[in-house]
Image 1 (cartoon, rainbow, N blue to C red):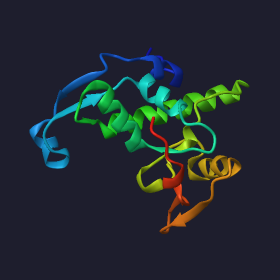
Image 2: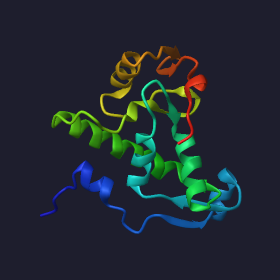
Image 3: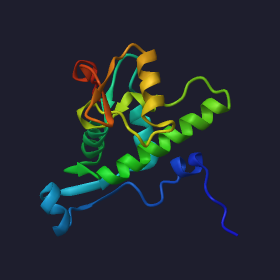
Image 4: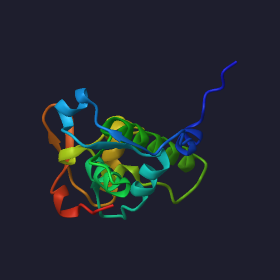
Length: 157
């Protein structure tokens, strides 16, 4: 019988990553020519951990750092997003176990300062954590929320 991996096991399972490969012809229509890196999940977690209280980053800033680290043109947006989700789930598991210092995933926003509905607890929980750290969250459209003046608090990772 197949045993499902825990979030922590997924975070530490680097399979054959990181992998840098040419951007496929199909992908070139979206991202242009060059190379794409699929990083290790733990690398995304490490970058998310660098964001201190009061500061923010975006998933695209993390992608830029990963591409630079691996000498690639871009980092894969799909796997980077998945790995950020894994890091957030591990952080929640660790908080539930009583651990105090966890990956502050709530400080990693989507592009445009938007909150991430795929994080544990959805937008509501991310909003509560950000507001507890002094950020102001405002509506952006019907379903989205963003951090007000997030650009002023962005850090490189």
